[in-house]
Length: 388
Image (cartoon, rainbow, N blue to C red; front, side, top):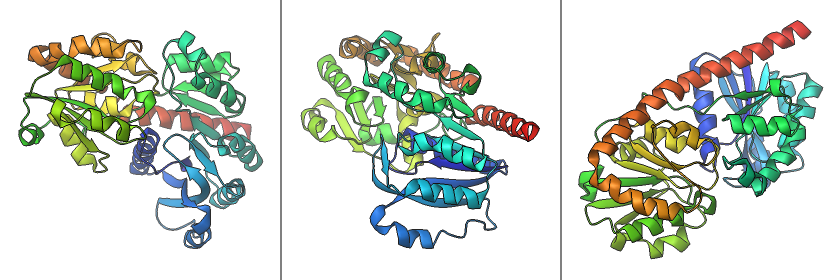
């Protein structure tokens, strides 16, 4: 089966990780994948396209660049010509199915019309973060995103979401229930696994607490930093901040080495990120809104005790003892109490780390994710075949 994947390859974010892991797994299962992504600014797009016009080569994977005006970790603004280029590319590629890992781009709204014209089945993965409490969600800007997208998602053949809350909300907003499928994110449990790391020795730390993700307002980073500073964790404990984002420059000067906080910035090397997680005793995710955090799943898969807010589907991941679920309100106050407990009780850390790893093996492996995705692809393909 030939899958045309529309997604992102930069800048680094959960959507990028999702697209990379899924497409690589599909290739491992002998699918043909064409990866269409916003890769070139409008100014130098033409030259790059001339080197990409050979769409049908002997390889099972090729990339097709789409021009953009602006893109960030959150949203993308394509050029006016991008929809025509996408239509032309799909007409040449003749894929069996288009899977769009939605990038919060105007192109998301045009995809149903393009695929209907070409008679190609269309699947979406809908990533926008949300609050797990419907009351909070309805009063937030995230709810507006769901309201805006729902009429267009109703025209997709399938829409993948991460939790029952998302599914119920989209159905209430008019997306047919038989088109909304829950397929949680998954991680490669063979790569992300417990193992040896020398990082603690390098940092001269007995206990290592880690945050890994975007340094942005919705991640509620300052609540974690305030709690750490207030808890006075001592010189034997260090907090490692992995990632970059718009508020890092304003936070780092106030929460630095004098409080045993180490800022490592964005780390592109996957093995280095795995080594950090293997060294960690506790992983903390204080977000106000989430989808389903891949960083959280990676930490759990490495056997790290996890604390995360009940944002998005993260609370579901940690429910029934697989970790500690925090309320999205007064996060700093909760962490101020919990951080010393994890410092003083290593047996609790070890127990929760084991449970976290077991939860991933039971529900959130990449293998399980791809099996469900394959089954959905086949259902759509068979439906199209019968209809034809």
